[in-house]
Image 1 (cartoon, rainbow, N blue to C red):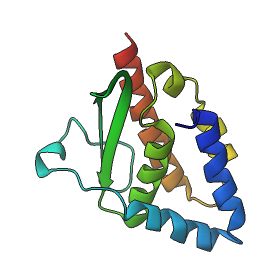
Image 2: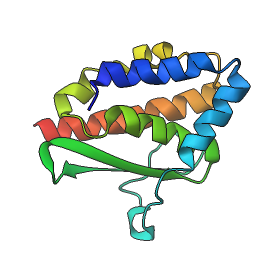
Image 3: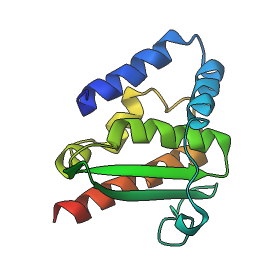
Amino acid sequence: MASIDQAIREIADEFALLPDWEERISYVIELGRSLAPLADAERNDATRVRGCASQVWLVGETNPEAPETLCFRGDSDAHLVRGEIALLLRIFSGRTPAEILSVDPRALFDQLGLKDALTTQRSNGLFSMMSRIQQAAKAAGS
């Protein structure tokens, strides 16, 4: 598995290949189509991410094949947000708590060039999802 920094660079490089943000947004939406939906029982208050305009659920759990790492799954009722979840899972799922906590959400946002592509409301939602992932890493690391 590539390092967390490599995963971020790969996504930034993929975005750089697309000529404009309209195509990048379409790409993100397409990534979201690959997400497996969560079970109805997993869509609850405990997994719901607050601070998102859309309905968003994130489930974090210890990876049974590599107990030192965390795996994340997520879902949303919005296509773009499903794509954002897919990006975050690509970066954070399968990582140790220390790796997850080493990422500065604002720096990640800048590295991926999302500042000009997302509305303030969407940006806040993405930060809420990253915060939830880092909370799970803090809980697992203690």
